[in-house]
Amino acid sequence: MGLNMRKNNKLIYFLIVAIVFIIGLIYFRGQSKPMGEEVVVDKVSKRTIKEMVGASGKVFPETEVKISSDVSGEIVELYVEEGDSVVAGQLLCKVDPDTYKSMVERGEATVNSSKAQVANSASGIARSKAQLIQAQAQLEQIKLQLENQGDIHNRNISLYKEGVISQADFENSEATLKQLQANFRSTEANVKTAEANVESAEQSKKAAEFSVKSAQASLKEMVTSLKRTTIYAPMGGIVSALNIEQGERVVGTAQMSGTEIMRIANLNSMEVQVDVSENDVLRVSLKDEVEIEVDAYLDRKFIGKVSEIANSASNTGNSISLNTDQVTNFIVKIRIVPESYKDIIQRGKEFPFRPGMSASVDINTETQKGVLSVPIQSVTTREGEQDDENEENKEQSKKKNEEIKEVVFVMSADTVKMVEVKTGIQDDENIEILSGLKEGEEVVTGPYSAISRKLKAGMQVRIEDKDKKEKKYY
Image (cartoon, rainbow, N blue to C red; front, side, top):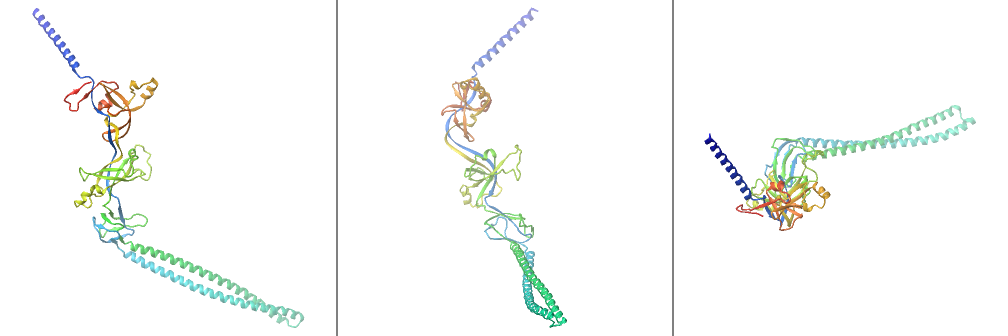
């Protein structure tokens, strides 16, 4: 039993010694471990910053015309193929003209018929005027006879009273007067009827003349339709798309676009159309220089200029969307500068770009040379923190603590101080510093986790050498 107790005591002593040794080892290792957060630093210096707006889109010809037919019918002749070069005024195709020739012939017949009606109306006017002249002459003759008979009747009244003539002669004289009066009224009515006939004939002639004009207008329209059965190129270029074959039928309307027959594009002048978000489009200006990458040309950049900026969003359509969650983009057109692909043309490729090719662009919205700047990852934001050196009183500190501010961490011996800054333009690597820093100061540039969350004002840090072979401690 005594032997067992001695063995147990030795085991306890051994365990105590081991624990003390381990604690001591941990302590000494802790003393030898470098103190502070490991960071990477860089100096505040003057650099050239190019602010860029990136976007993607498609390559299109600057000028592309859709050729549609104004008349309906069968394509009886097709003179071009896709890829052919054409000049302005060149005959492209023909629509079957037979139907429209028949319409023109009917229109000509209608015009001739209307002109015949005008001639008939003119003859009717002449007849009516002759009848009017005859009626007026009869009226004048009866009027003279009536005046003479009136004088005779007046004399017969005196003679009848004196008993010179008999009652029968007097009554005959009175009857003749009344007959002449009746004839006068009848002839006067005939004159008015003849005048009305003349006016009616003149109106008929005017109506016939209007019919002639209407028939001539219809004939002109028919002739125009007949001419439109032959389709010519409105501009020179390349047939970039051919949508029909000879023998197919096309639908044409004068008020709206008919069947699209083909497209003619000027492939010597190309542009890239891209969608730019509403947050970036206000920074883009006409004639901004652009770097263009076309997927078909690997490791090759082309130069372009902004030629057009849309005033309305591309995804609103005819109605305005009130949904603020929807992404709003604006179409920006960028002309590809021919000099940037001149070498490709010289190698025998006449048209380096084809409509519909995918492209991405970087629009240089602003360039600043020699501006005070730091690496872009150096700038972060803080909320609810304030460097004690900048506090004047609790009230000001409270207001500042409620704001989100842009800050950088500046080296100060073996610690960092948090400095609020104002920033300007930026590119992919650097950001302009408008205030808060001086040239030559060292700022923390990494790691990201330290800058974004860990670092506090006054925190002890150590700088990591770039080659990581030795470390410098403050």
